[in-house]
Length: 291
Image (cartoon, rainbow, N blue to C red; front, side, top):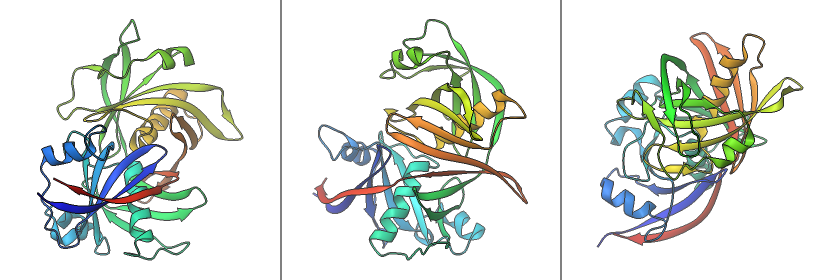
């Protein structure tokens, strides 16, 4: 039996088990992670985050080459134990963990650099909690047909990559959004080689108020199922909606999910357009678990 400490955290209901591994010695198998994240027999979570120094994990070498100050690496696993590139809510909870456990200091205006498998993410404090620069994004040109329980006819989906893959589907009404059965994974045609998170979006009426676009969303995460929130999915949904809305669409978006509301902002940089995500992040409790 192995015993180790953990912290439970959440960002708009997207919840995680965080495990500090300062020595880089914790070896958790996919089965271990799935047991910990199980909501009936484990702690219960949408994913597990191992908090490990970048130089003690093989994937951290790229992060340190990109940004030498990215001391900490977010080793993120989905609830089924599979490895994921990035999690937008998880990285904010990661920042909350580092600051509250006094592993780093982050004053207003300072930037915290976090290593992830989707590159280094820059985080700052803001009134909502934390804002993270999710980096560059790209649309996927190939159209994907999406079938989901609760929708009679397959719908076209817009592929968006924000470090991990997404397919965003526009629905006609809130009723359609509410009637979705996301206990079953949506069927994608063609199916992406690495799978994808699938977001279902309904625009508010009116779509834009005071220069801010507004949408509602539900999401099915690969390796997890439906979650109350998905940070990268929220970003992908806002980006897809802006593409559909045309050149006059705003660069600021408010995205409502079952777990709350987050902000998305698109902004230019020297290397191309980046997208930022802002919202709350909280630590719920500490505990110990045996495997």
